[in-house]
Length: 171
Image (cartoon, rainbow, N blue to C red):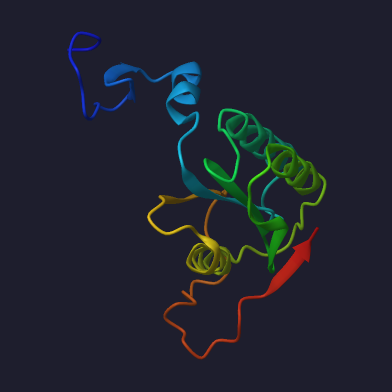
């Protein structure tokens, strides 16, 4: 029962805090995530089909969400990506400074690419990032914000001879 037993897992709409299932609220989620060790990749669809208003709302959501994490070398580390015709990384893979992550999100907010939607390239690049830079024995997570169907329906993992994922770097 909620609040009356020690829990090891919670039902949907609840979050585990100090072995107790609490209602899923922004505050409770922040408390549950604080100090947790994980590597997170945030991927933003910057294609032309995303309105500037929706793009701004999504970036604000990312900024607000990251504020609930403890970003540090021993807790959450965060990578910020945008995709459209290519994949752009903001800052370095797995930033461990909250100030750097927020700065990268600020840059992302003013840099919508507004072209095609190569979702598969973004997912593949995120996978490569987790393989090359993720910490062993630490949960690897990806949050992808997009408005819909990809421009290319070919999965780059299946197309082995495809040239390397297109990448731009924004520091």
